Amino acid sequence: MFSTTRNGHRARALGALLLGTWVGTVAAGEPHPQWTLYAPFIGGQNTSTFLLDLDGDVVHTWPSNFTPGASVYLMDDGALLRTCNDMSVSPIDGPGRGGRLQRIGWDGTVEWDYVAGGEDFIQHHDVEILPNGNILAVVWERYSRAEAIAAGRNPALVGDEVWSEAVLEIRPDGPTGGEVVWSWHAWDILVQDFDAARPNFGDPADFPDRIDVNFAATSATADWLHFNAIDYNETLDQIVVSCLTFNEIWVISHAPEDSSELLYRWGNPQAYGRGTAIDQQLYGQHDPEWIPDGLPGAGHLTVFNNGTARGFASIDEIATPLNPDGTYHIEAGQPYGPTVPTWTCDEIDGQPFTATIMCGVQRLPNGNSLLCLATGGNFIEVDDTCSAVWNFDANGLVFRATRIDERDPRLAGRLFGLPGDMNCDGTVSVGDINAFVLALTDPVAYAAQFPDCDILNGDFNDDGALTVGDINGFVAALAG
Image (cartoon, rainbow, N blue to C red; front, side, top):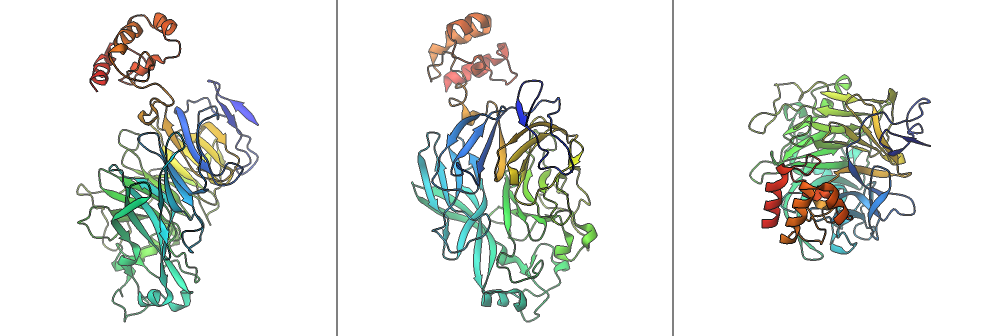
């Protein structure tokens, strides 16, 4: 079933995913242009990654020989960083496993092919590209039963092995190589009140910056923590991860000189003995992300709250108690704030929605939020009143969807012309000067002389038009 917005963009109904009998239509709002990136898990094309326009048409495809494992990211030059599920690299096998990282060029060439796994570790779920080009990878680490018991874990909750979590920073090296230049390991900051003979014995309530090795363990399941997402804040030099089994998000420092303890945690203060079930806020959450500078809510965290065991999902915005020095305020004996999200959306067009696995949310420059409801591959853009302004049905399991700006510089020369290339010859040179002047003074004549060119190649101040305000930007482009 299709419906149409004011500007003609097609959208599929969401009724199959929402509770009740709601039949989806698109509100008379404006979605944020333009491209949406995603990689399906199932179906006939589950080894490819796609870029869609707002009409739901595929404008570019990156092929692969692997299904995702599980996230994908657009890189600075239009290449794709793709996590790959490679069953050959490690015996560790759980939901979201990966094991291989690939950089795939715009033309489909595999430019980097790195095995991120071994006998006792494997990359899974998510990665993050750092400003220096290095990659943060979420990794399972395998520990033996004896090692777990030595760390103070209750023997009744240990099978043959326990998987803990780590974050590795990998510097790509050559076509297949990589060097781990920084790492963080959950196993380094454990606390427990089960075995007083162990060196990490203590009351978890006295150590909110440490991880209770026996919390959330109701059986001998190996995947004890199950991280499912990672994000990086360059300004703070901090990392946020989502710990599904604790129903928490954790913030850690990336600075080499800092300790590895948790800087901040939120979602379930029961996990460190400073709350009860009434205080729990997160339920099987995914995809915590800092809202970038310049966007509504900048500096806050957004998270997709799946609502597991709660019965309904939501997207939540959290104003963290950040101190000027990069630490987080916490009162003695109390949990980290806030007590409730700053903003939450638990209905779309007045209807509750459910999301049992995966999913994601991204704050957009126009203040809207892009949701990915993973099970059906439904992408929904909502405004700040939780009204849908755009949606698309990918008809299959999708880990996450990411909106890319209409004229994102990573796509310049690929989906739109190079900034400054006014004669569309593929370069920015003195040959573009006359074309720029013509476009500025007589747009109609410019369109007639250069019918295949986009006049907005000269829109350097991003106001949606070519004006005298773009002259300085054009001159700078000519100068290189």
